[in-house]
Image 1 (cartoon, rainbow, N blue to C red):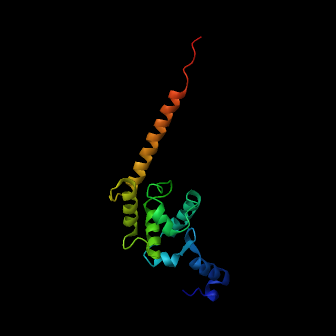
Image 2 (cartoon, one colour; image 1 turned 90 degrees about the vertical axis):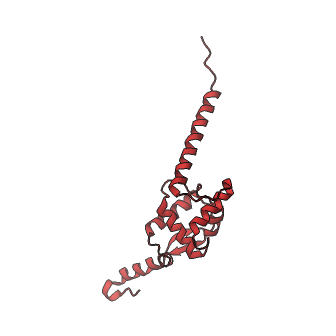
Length: 157
């Protein structure tokens, strides 16, 4: 795209040119630009930027999109602020990198479903997050019950 400095002004033209080449999604050493994501039909650049930040803080040890696909399960990504649009961006990123075949999101879910429970069932991310939240609630309740049992009864006076 020609960002005409004569018409737009040099600072604006330079900023637009820089925006076009700056990575919008970063996962470890993998960096994807708007153009790369757009090439596979992904235009959710704000979601890509947010996903970068969340992955950077929550999954510090992830070094690449390949490692994310292989080692991080959908349940591990059932985090606040990650939803279906974020997963769509992630699927597009895998598509750009050629990870996961023709349908990388389903391949990712199947890969981790079979590793966790022997099933290759594909469920929506909403279902994954709901199951994860329910399991966390059960665990908190069990922890509270265990703490109550450990608390000694008061000695009568």
